[in-house]
Length: 123
Image 1 (spheres, rainbow, N blue to C red):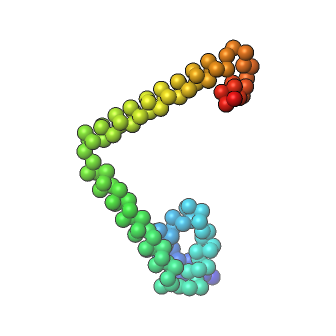
Image 2 (tube, one colour):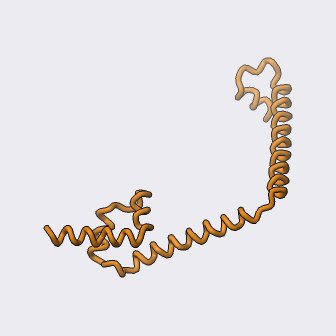
Image 3 (tube, rainbow, N blue to C red):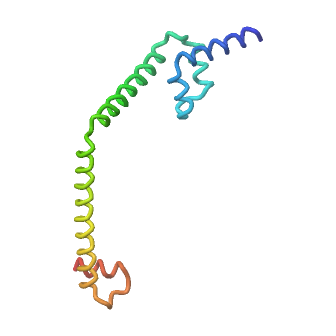
């Protein structure tokens, strides 16, 4: 019993050193049992733990680069992009309303359902 408890404590210490492994369980990619069995069979120095660590480092670098780019954005530039998006959405909305009004004119009051009005448009 004492050896089992010691192994469990060693595994917990290993997890504290490698918090990215804990995330795999939280993300439901792995189970505690699977991780413990792999750790028990292959040890702490196995490549599988290094691969997980490098993936975590890569994701941290990616997040850091995104953060840096966001910090370097100019407020005026952001406002200009938002205005351009707003104008584009208004233009699309206008086109859609024109299309809908043309469809309803062609369908006329005799169209009973939406499908019939579309069929009239495509004839």
